[in-house]
Image (cartoon, rainbow, N blue to C red; front, side):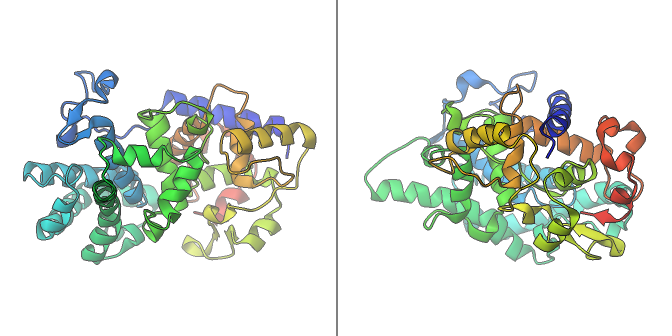
Amino acid sequence: MDIEKSKELLIKICEIGAKHPQVPDLYDLFPFRHYFDSSNKLIREEIEKIDGLWTRREILARYLLVSSVLDQGPDLEGVRNLLKNVVNSLYEKEIRILHKPLDFFKELNISIDEILEKHESIKMVRSELWAKENKTTPNKYNLFTDRTKQVLGYAVYRWGVPLSLFHLLEKDLIKNGKSSEEPFVEYIESWDSAEIMSQQIKDNERYGLGKAIGDKAGHLFAKFYLHTFGINKRNDNGFGPLSYELPFDSNAGRVLFRTGFLLEFAELKEYEKWGVIQKEKGKGGKDYIRVTNIRGKNCDKIVNYEVFMNLYNEVIVNHLRVRKRKTRKIEIQRVPNALLLETEYGIGHLDDGLIYIGTNFCYNHENPKCSGCPVNEICLAYKRIDLIDNYRT
């Protein structure tokens, strides 16, 4: 790996992310109508103000977790509109699922109806544009995770599991004779770092969401909580800008592969062996990039090894806090944290930049808008068209 070349690319993407932050619009949500000012900015000085039984921070954090769980569909704008529109409609009917999670289940028939109705209305507006951008047909437009057609399973599994977590935390407080105005916030900030928090949200024996949430979604929640809305109470390195891994999704995988960033860490044959590159498994018989399979894979292509190892160990011991002492093994998914260590940028800036490039230029087909892409001068695929022609995410 060429440290300086890779760092230059990441910084450029972070600069783009800083100029084009990807912030979901929450100001027009019914439960948050008093949380934002006339400029649609979060009123931070009132983040601890009580709303019902909980603080505003607690309610926002709950919404962000549900949003992260659902944020896995093929159309980012459509997915976020679905969540927003359903929540607004339920709250207008006094079904306050963030304040009273059991409301979702008590009025399950209404919850299901709203999801179906709002999905259909979004499909009517978004499907043609989505199909054109992705070179497919509008009838394939489906925002339900895993593209299932069974709304009951989707609603209970993807909406119901995180809502059940909030209810369980509330019940456990009562059982233990304790009280809190921020049970979910206190739980997630009890972990040593945002990275460990993102793992525990999925894997904890009592409170883990299990398969209802993936690694990408856990990291996305950390990004929303720390970077996008910055509602965290803790501000130490463990809950700082480099305290969680990049949410590796199709946009991130496509951009980092085409630019040549991933090829700095391992050869194509290694990615094929790991299942990161899956021969002829992509759309149109192209090779499929399954970037989530990169987790835990080691990098051995290092120039200036000792210099980089110092940065890497600083990150994993003092920021991610996934190890107590130094290591000699470099996991590829943690390399971006190390490269950004001595910069002004964090993982949130990098993810915002990847989303902006991936959704506006680096399309998942053979005709991306390379000529207008802001990183084309340092993008390998701009010179090697095979990295575009032969691979899909």
